[in-house]
Picture: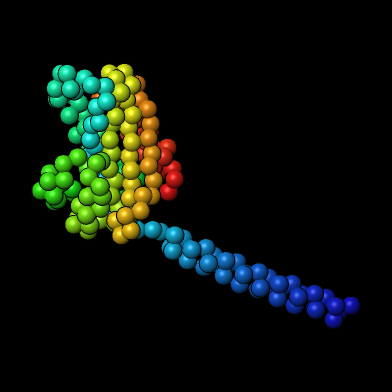
Length: 184
């Protein structure tokens, strides 16, 4: 009986030692995985939004300065939201101002966004459009592409109602929260 009790204590001691070693090993593996999972932010050039006016209001009334200012507002908002997420490091597109100006409309320039982003040493490029169907109905679309390959990573869009600062900003916020950052 005495030998049996000593053997059981040794077995329990060995099991406790092995359990502690395994727990320590598991902790190291998890801690190492956490360190490996910490991904560096993607260097991204976020180019300014552009207006695609299919409502014909622009053709009959000319450029609406309020809408032009809204494009600036939501471009700035998109950069701020992406930077705040920590998943993106924003590259200042103003450094390629001449190249951007000579491209004309980015959404129809046949890939000039890639060469602009490459000149900015960015890994990704993001472009956006607001399509104005009418004063009430608009669509916001954001495209993210990989600079090295030119591959389109994603295109997200949302329909908004109302031609106001609030509705345009709400559309961009919704896309960032529910489509861009949710997918990463």
